[in-house]
Amino acid sequence: MSKTILITGAGSGFGKGAAIGMARNGHAIIATTQVSSQVTPLREEAAALGLKNFRVERLDLTDHYDIQQAQGWDFDVLWNNAGMGEAGPVWEIPIELVRKNYEINVFLPLVLTQGVVQKWVREGRKGKVVFTSSMGGLFTPANWGTYVSTKHALESIAEALQQELSHYGIKIQTINPGAYYTGYNETMADNPFRWLDDSRNFTKRADLRKGFDDFFATPEGKMDPKEMIDRMIEVVPADTGKFRNVVPKVIEDMLKDHQLKAWENQI
Image 1 (cartoon, rainbow, N blue to C red):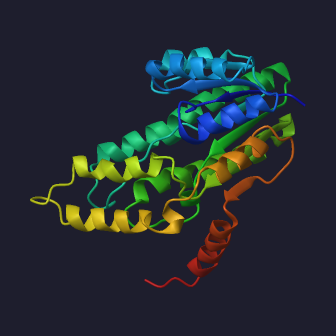
Image 2: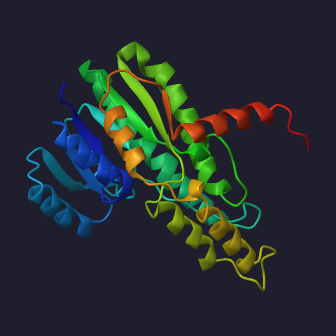
């Protein structure tokens, strides 16, 4: 059955690829971008692809009026896909950057979601909310702690929402990508170098850069995003499926093993 799907963060990466794929499958898409300059190019691209069911709007989560407007649109699925990441050592990162990461990844998506699901409940309408979490929502590697802690928070929020809203016929789901090569993780890895100072910080810039570069040089650090986009195209509109969706399978197995070992972790 065709769905109308609102996607945040659809200007690039997973959101853009999956939005186009779902539109090709017959779903009506409301693709939103954070910045106005992304709106017209995406509209033109959708038109060039012959997608008649592809609407593009600006939705900057930091703009109260953008959120208010979006909460009034008519759609069946809300996909909270927009996000950003602050990397670097948790014991040295400026606390205002931690607050900013939580504002973008947790608080503002929750504001949007609250308005949407409360409207659905008032109208007696069923719907679905999907959150783009991360493999990092289920484990914590050093120097990624700020970002992945926001995804841990989303995991908890989604789990609570699933229990609270099931009575109303509203479904909740998470998608947990591995380290696919969309530019998102690479941009996040650059962020600490705007504040990290060798004259003040214990963590040295060269050491942190080498750690990030070594990770991105591995097959697990630079996977083809098409695999994840193809799964998102299936998962987001579906009426049934897993609550949590980790891709690829090798990362799901790694996370399960990590969580088991956490019970034996020693200080």
